[in-house]
Amino acid sequence: MSRSTQGGCNEYADLSRRSFLGVGGAALAAGAVVPAWLPRIAFAREGAVPRDILVSLFLRGGADGLTLCVPHGDPDYYTARPNINIPHPDSGDPARAVDLDGFFGLPQAMSSLTTAYDDGKLLFVHATGSVDETRSHFDAMHFMEVGKARDPSLYTGWVGRHLITVPPLDDQAAIRAIGISTGLQRHLVGAPKALPFPDLNESSLNGPAPTKDARLQSIDDMYQRAPELLRTSAENTISTMQLLDAIDFANYQPANGAVYPESYFGYSLKSAAALIKAQVGVEAISLDIGGWDTHESQQPRDGYMAYLMQELSASMAAFHLDVIGEGLPVTLVAMSEFGRVVAENGSEGTDHGHGNVMMLMGNHISGGRVLSQWPGLHPDLLFQHQDLAITIDYRDILAEIVQNRLANPDLGFVFPDYTPTFRGVTT
Image (cartoon, rainbow, N blue to C red):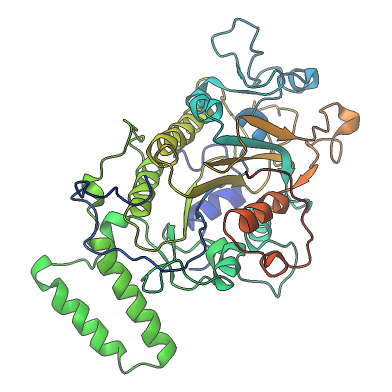
């Protein structure tokens, strides 16, 4: 059974087959040697307001936040999960949690993130998520990515609306947002100059290399006779393909000894790092990592979920060394559509839940801590008698990033009909 569907429900398996489609050092120092993988062009918009590049990681399938960030200080956690818990840091068990603050900890599979946490660049936000009660993967993803639940008139994504309301960092940039996926993620929908590419190193036309330029020119000539909207879209697509083709992703060398996992997700995040350092005007990059629908055989200590957490954390740890450690203006946000039920089920898995955890990384993230208004896991305190309650709306976190790190005060447009409460996640 493939990792992306192991233990998952039928709805998640169907979404996996459709690939979760929503719709179909800063600049190099003077005198430094220019790496061969960089493109031959770079843009710089005079007078642009400084703002971060946003990297969004979506954990598709409903990741179990109670395992990603373990509330080992709550005894009801161990009562509810006698077989699939992460042992207490003081237990002496080889699989024991790595303590973070005396109450929360990381599973051994996520221990590679302790460096970023201790560096003050990684923040966990617990008991967070969308307050909508849906347990449908499709609906929950859609609601979170558009930034508002149950509004059929809203189809653009929150990142898309953000980019609509701010000028480009670089006026000449061919691309402003990229989804590393077979289809554009819903939260990017509506963004100007946004395209999906499943592999940034394979972004050019297929076919014989000697005829590539001629074939691109033929496509361009064909669309010159098309209506303006279609013609502009085609021109942007061709320009982006040529731009990405100029970056030698295959020979990119990460900084500070960072090593990304040899997996699709690890390779994709490594490619995102190369794209950021190429300074071609991209403002938002989105990636997905699926497989979190763990209804059975969750195996958080040594097995399925442990391997998945290891892939995620090792990729993020490499990104911390490679990008955040270089002082680059980047904010990374990792989130999932909902958490899992507190109590384990009879198959040693967990079913669709409610409250969850978010992870934020960046040089202007107030990290080195777990931010939470912990509601408790006693049965009397659970949402609908079974789930971790949500005490921090996920839009509070995103809105603070949009305003303070992405330099966009138009929060009423980015998150319609919602007034956020800032939680102090940025510095």
